[in-house]
Image (cartoon, rainbow, N blue to C red):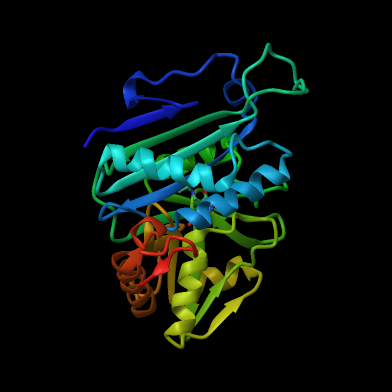
Length: 294
Ligand code: PDD
């Protein structure tokens, strides 16, 4: 079960992989990425991640190194070679390497990097969070590798002795976690902010909304003021790495009774059940459609 890296067609053990210091990802954060979960030997929702990658590329007018179906095969091949059962699949495309100049010269070859890693520690079953001012750019729907505001927000969380930071806009609206989407529950209704360009439209968020609707949970996708968020009965976060994780304390105060609530618990279990049932296209006898649970 080796942890592997792929750099422009060359596969090596992860620790041996190298890119040029002139790569525009390194110099300018001129690139995009995706993170997909590896669960029970399966790449969860790879097709949805690749569709979002294509959208991010379009937003930045960044050419992808190969057509999407070929990219999918390349991801699945790397994952199969690593044989990792539970971990994280990372994919990054940058505009390529060239002498440092802000406007990229035409004709650059994009740099494609992929890595497979094992899960380094058990996933938390509940977490704590603080809110922080949103100081990010206006293209948060693009999964860009320029993550300095995220890094600073995570540092603020560490300093505060909590696990995550949640961005709140100047207008008092709750947006998303530093690396996850936010949900809250009030009187049995599930609330989450809209994917209106101020947040990343999470793949896990999308699945959780589908699972909530299947279970007859009332869902309200609408702007979420901080005071309503703070008064919620339950709060939880979603991401490909965390899956669904309840937030039991926010800004130093307990959320609800300070324990994971019933809706968060139902949706966490529903998401884990979805992952257990998930079948990728490569597992299907007819590998033509998009992946979905059996
Ligand atoms: N982050 N919002 C932000 C800002 C994110 O960075 C992420 C994912 C999400 C959740 O998206 P998804 O459900 O598709 O993982 C929401 C990844 C895990 C990361 O940067 O490591």
